Image (cartoon, rainbow, N blue to C red; front, side, top):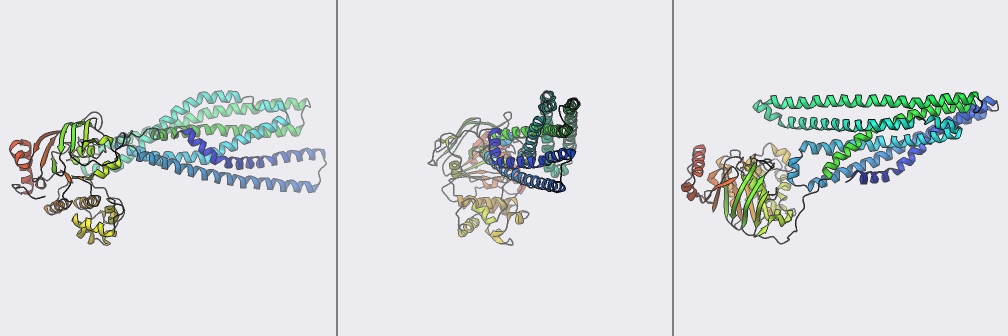
Length: 578
Ligand SMILES: Nc1ncnc2c1ncn2[C@@H]1O[C@H](COP(=O)(O)OP(=O)(O)OP(=O)(O)O)[C@@H](O)[C@H]1O
Ligand SMILES: [Mg+2]
């Protein structure tokens, strides 16, 4: 969305508001002329009492028209501003929906939330409040100028004699303003991002009493904000007073010229006074117009920020293939880094054969979840190729890939609606029976039934009561409904007691036979039976094979099994059925 397109759209909507505003301004000007006319008549002594009353009534009427039309204009302006606002927000959200995770990785979430909330709000401020004022002021200036030119063209020119100087000054100051506002804007952004992050990390900070660095950073950005706010205010006040001075200059020229003309009897007293009154209003209105320049600069800056999101094109999707290829999954020479520096995956070559059970094990940070993220298409590999049934996932539509592969993530995200709805995400048109059936298979039915409102319990209500393992089983129920041929289970890292572990295992075995299973396991007891186990370390696959083979061949695997045995005092000797 370019500023121009958007402004065009808004101006179209705001046209009625401008017309109403103009009527209001003209109605407000009429009394001045009428009074002056009356003064003229009075000075000549030919006025009857009735016409003074009529004059009073006319002024009242004009004021009423001015007030009513002003109110209507402002209402219309708000109306169009809010609908434009909603449109920008929707456009932003729609745009964000199409962006890849990579984009969100680069932009802080605080920054994006800030744009959707505050920057868009600032657009409203300009469109609903400033823009109508700009229109009012422009109409007022035009009416005054024409009036004074009609009174006496020499006075009219005198009144605007300093305007070129004002524009020159504006031109110079504008550059300064824009830069300052950019800096100020930046400091507001940094401050709110830091604050948001700070608030989000307070629990961690408290838990580890590691506040020093974070607090300092927040304080620094607060100080920077205050400094720029001060500079922006001073930077605005000084040029503004200078411009005001130049404008007053026009009034002085008008008064001097008017006096000369009056002395030479070229104009009468009434014209002179009227010109001086109008001249005063002119410079006041002009000063107001100048003060809007600042708001305009803020507005432009805001639009540029919005554009910095809207301007980023979603990554091109390649040619789509509609038929879903189920088959072996293959990673060929996959390389990947989240930040372009540190490798999260290096030289990954693997095959998950169709309808086999595969396990990935390895220390924290070794790249297990990353591998799953790439297969889900959440991120794109920097090098190499991932294929399913021989077709590259890059050539697949997001929807097709997601129909093919489903995942239970390490941290399960539940929406704040009922548990039934959360399960139904797996299959939108699933009936109640189907949902219950899936929950039963996922070994979570009994738990749900123990909640106060069963399947209708809102996740928020139950949230505190749902353990990581329970959330994972809800997610497994989702997956059972979805019935995708490839299933990834990224086990929760948190220690899960043997009973829950048993339930999860049982839930997985209920997923059905014909599936390619990829289990990222933290608890080795669950995977001894797998057809293939991959041992990962530092983004690489260090060993692969079946449990018994790895017990013999991989030191690392041996150590992991030993550690696991020590933790739960279990002996993993024989393969358990999955
Ligand atoms: N969103 C992200 N942005 C940047 N770096 C990330 C991101 N997610 C993971 N990483 C980094 O990539 C590396 C691999 O992380 P990954 O989450 O794949 O590990 P993991 O094996 O799943 O670990 P865990 O057992 O703790 O779940 C780590 O160094 C991690 O810090
Ligand atoms: Mg992980």
